[in-house]
Length: 134
Image (cartoon, rainbow, N blue to C red):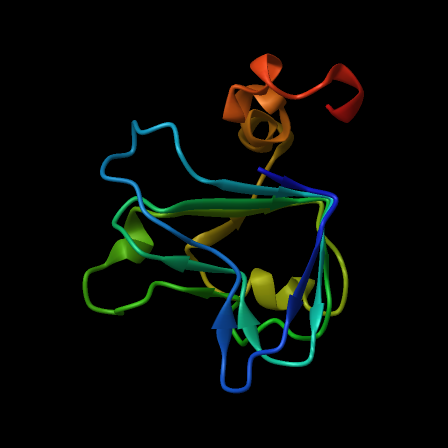
């Protein structure tokens, strides 16, 4: 879980903010970016599918105009990962936000779908995140 951070791309051809891999849809792993800011000078994918069940979510995040066309990368374009990955955004904005919604297999989440990624329980945080940081 990344919270209140700035992700600044200096890619020259293209880059990727996150690449995630899960072996099954029941694995409780993934990346969650909350209240972040995506800026920079080079084109960047906000997520890349390393595995068949990759999971990456952005919520309340500002996307500058550095987001690459399509926003997301399924990495090999052959294995149909785009049918099994979980890539989503919730209440994001900025000039690059429309690009993050640029592929059919990334979705605009409803609150019920986004909620598990917004809570510190996603990273078992009640054991190590101070209440004031929640």
